[in-house]
Image 1 (spheres, rainbow, N blue to C red):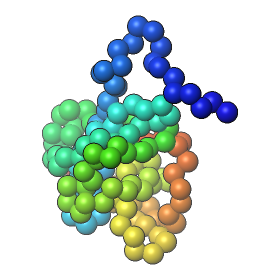
Image 2 (image 1 turned 90 degrees about the vertical axis):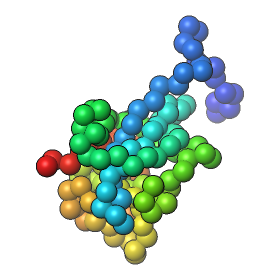
Image 3 (image 1 turned 180 degrees about the horizontal axis):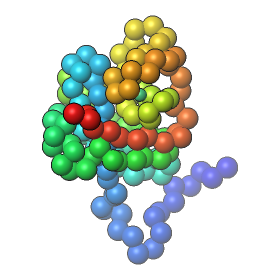
Image 4 (image 1 turned 120 degrees about the vertical axis):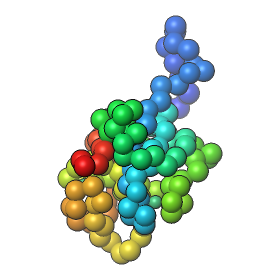
Length: 133
Ligand SMILES: [Zn+2]
Ligand SMILES: [Zn+2]
């Protein structure tokens, strides 16, 4: 059992954690938003969500963000700017993020239309994506 909190390896600055922006699609509003994720011990922590247009997401390159590992969130995380949920569903098929709105045990992916059962995300990876319009 590794219990102790490890400091980052020598030479790395602790005050500037690596951060990326992933895109999530809201089921409620059918709009996308950006989620800022900070590198954590094992995976990523959501710190902030903000509305963004698919054009600017594409321009910033947010549609090609790939994240590996588990996804958690910090206490400050504000949730989806449209529906307020703080929980994501990662699509099995396209690995993109959707807002989780509980409507039973199935969900439909707003990105690719895949339907499936809601299962626990296993940390296999997330592929961000923009609208292909
Ligand atoms: Zn939402
Ligand atoms: Zn999908």
